[in-house]
Length: 313
Image (tube, rainbow, N blue to C red):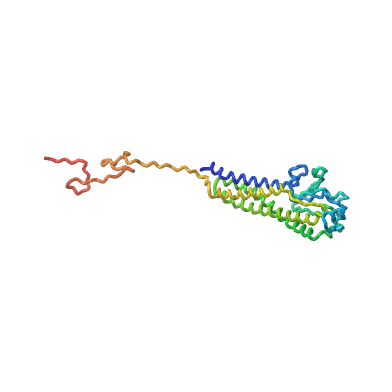
């Protein structure tokens, strides 16, 4: 097959690795630029407060629930002071907030500074600290935020390790062009990358899914709705699929496509009718000539060789 065939054999896993890397980069870019609509649509968690109502009687009537007046008062004060925006979108490194017009169009007005181990704390963001609401926040929501804060560190670390291993997989994959040993090493790196990206994807999906459910349970009576971005989830799990597929094809390239030429040397055998020189009895044998055994003359038991014999009458 040769080197050309070897290159063709690893092209597929290399392309899949690049695709997985691009997906991770897109996930990392969510909410990092308030002027880019593409990145604004990528978020793990969104809190929509645009329909927040300040009338407790209306809340009780519509939702048939008991209202925590202290929490409602704190949220009302935050809304009056314009500290409560219409929406909050949470990415990996920061969050962005903004306003929603009458037609439902969202405009980002502020994005927080990027932070390594970022987690969204509504008490601080909504300016509820040093209020009664901070103390009387439902236990279910406080427990959910505590878990979110702790798990967020592991989640971010998994994403960082995954993207570093993906870059390493591309570099090591170049050596796979020349030998199957290179494919073997790349397969090991690819397996580690798959483990971390799968772990990060599962953790973020489960974590923000739980946080979304907790927000809706506790704050939906106040018409504060939480959700996750289907676009972010699609890009994230597509990157996982690319990672798993690349690992499989790296493994295949370890077993196949050696890169050695398949041409064999042709050995020409001598035909039974070719002429070969025999050794001369007078000049002696030459190196490589076939040796002839002398035949004894009639009546002579010696080893002398007589090419001709004359008889006298």
